[in-house]
Length: 224
Image (cartoon, rainbow, N blue to C red; front, top):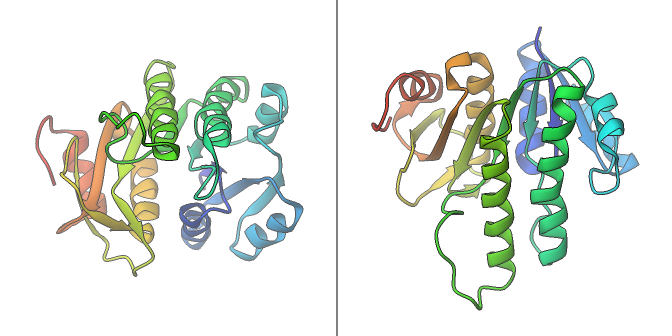
């Protein structure tokens, strides 16, 4: 059994991941910021832990992460939030978790980012500019953290049923991907230690998820 701590466990990808991990016999610790979300995580088969990453100290978060074998950061301020919360959640929450991980004895760290967040944005892009800057900066910090990181950058997320097949590469070109398949991709990365140290984009494709991770973990510059 692998124990995985998920920051943003009540999000749309996070809930799918909790369910998937529970179904295959792993333990999911879901870090959530509202009391009612603790029960929702339990219904999915995980263990909910109440902690707000916008106000928690690094020591408090490390305590919540204790006993985990890996961390998945899938939190985001979400649609309708302004630039301030995008910075405090998407960037600040990731940086806090990166700092807490070694205190909790956890080295493996998978981060869900976004496709194109390193691309230039128009000066008047508003909330979108704040979002991509937060994600890009969080990814940069993670790459230099010394943790065993994997960064996943999905295209436009959909609620369509997962196909179990993706296109995974350093750059895939634009496209969409099911949240089901993103959750499956996270699980596949958890299963494959060679996926550490890689940053990939992902969209719909024709390669089974686990195969795509295996191929891309061992190949430079090609897409699956």
